[in-house]
Amino acid sequence: MTALLVDRVSWRVGAVPIVDDVTLAVEPGEFVALIGPNGAGKTSLFNLVSGLRRPSAGRVVLGGDDVTKAKPHQRARRGLGRTFQTSAVFASLTVLENVELAVRAREGGATRPWRSRSDRAVTETAERILTEVGLDDRAARPAGELAHGEKRKLEIALVLAGSPRLLLLDEPMAGVSAEDVPALVKVIKGLTGDGRSVLMVEHHMDVVLELADRVAVLHHGALLAIGTPAEVMADATVQEAYLGEEL
Ligand SMILES: Nc1ncnc2c1ncn2[C@@H]1O[C@H](COP(=O)(O)OP(=O)(O)OP(=O)(O)O)[C@@H](O)[C@H]1O
Image: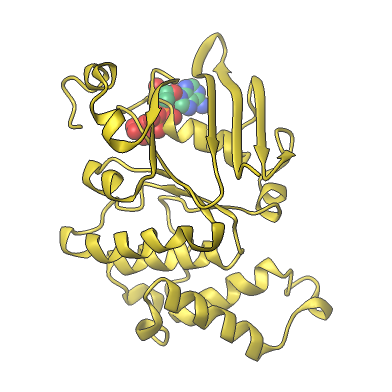
């Protein structure tokens, strides 16, 4: 079953179409990168998928369920996870404690303690996630002391605590120093294991080309092209859309 279907989605502000009749499917285990010049509508499309905005027309379908009218937390319960460019990390807590909190939040531990698992089980889950993102050797460090690239990994860990089937990554390389990029790319590459899907907005084309199975190009709110990285890079309309910008 398709992990995500964006079905003829439009979002208008007043009469201005910001997202214009976009259709896009992400399959289980697939990695799709969403690119486009500044102001193309990438963040707006993410907001429509995660439920921060409601489309003016069209449907958003997650794992076969129509979630067009569902709120963000309801979509999260249906397997959608999203990282933001602003961090939700508690700087004074350790890296492990941050992930433990996220695991408990997923289980409603604070408000429904009778449903929470034992401390040991929560810690084990958090440790497994830290290993997955390559932060196991940082578990006992205060999160505030992490380098930028490590913080990005922690943000991914916090989203993984929700056991998402589809991850929306919003510019995961933003602010990450060049030397930290390869390690972060390696972690992100591993995220599609076990049938999990990723939809990523990213400006660094080398990262996009390395990670993406398919690339979708937005331009003026509309889907200009979608295909393998090689197909999209060779597309004359895509090159034209990027004229004057770095591709
Ligand atoms: N709430 C809003 N009201 C009016 N216009 C908006 C609103 N949100 C976004 N826009 C406009 O819609 C267009 C697309 O914005 P969006 O942030 O989705 O683009 P983007 O592709 O993510 O850009 P960038 O790469 O610069 O982050 C922009 O022209 C923006 O000014």
